[in-house]
Image (tube, rainbow, N blue to C red; front, side, top):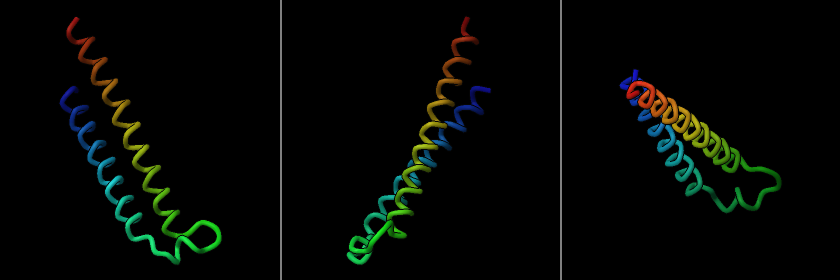
Length: 77
């Protein structure tokens, strides 16, 4: 079970990293036209989506680490 949780933790961390990189790439592709428009731009919406996805992956990784530690403590007693 611990091995399975460790694999899930690694996958969640990779997901957070990929979301972070995609968000940075979208940010770097933002044009002057996107900044001058009125209302939210497509680029801004995509950046926000990637930020939320990264937060979700990080939260999942934290929950999995807590489960991993709880199982390790229960198994060691």
